[in-house]
Image (cartoon, rainbow, N blue to C red; front, side):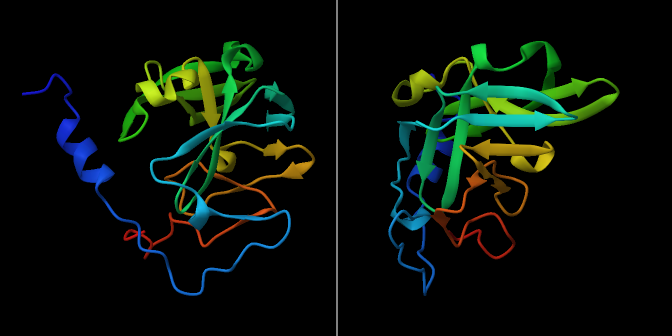
Length: 183
C-alpha cells in the first residue's frame, strides 16, 4: 500500500510509450526536435530573457527561467515567482496531475477589466526530480497576448490542453491535436 493517491495514474502514464510518427523531420543546425527530448522529461535553465504580456502589461519578465523538455511536446517555460507580477494572479479552482512533476494548481489573471481564467499553472510541492520548479509559474501562450523567448515570439502548443511554447528552433510534430493521443 502506498501513501501516494496518484500511484496508479502515475504508473500508467510513466509506462505509456510514445509512438514516434513517420516522417519526423531531422533538425538542422540550431534546431531541436521534440522527438529527441527524453522521457522522463529533462529540466534545464534558459539563458534567454523570457516575457509574458497581457493587456499591455508584463505579467512575467525573467532571465532565470527553467524549461521542461519532454518527448512529443514543445518545452514548457517556468518563471520564478519573484519575476511574476503575482498581484495580477488569483488562484483558480482547477487542478491537474503530472506523472513526473506531481499535483498542479492553476492561476487566473486580472489586468484592469480583463480577466483570463487558468492562464498559468504551478507545482507547489513538485516531485523530487523537479523540486526546483517550486515557486515558479508556467503560462499558456494561447491565453495571453504574447510570450517571448529572447526576441522570438512564441506560438502555443496545438490543441489547448498542454502548455508548451513553440519557438522557431523547435520542430514537431507536437502532441495535442486530435489524432495525437497515441503519442
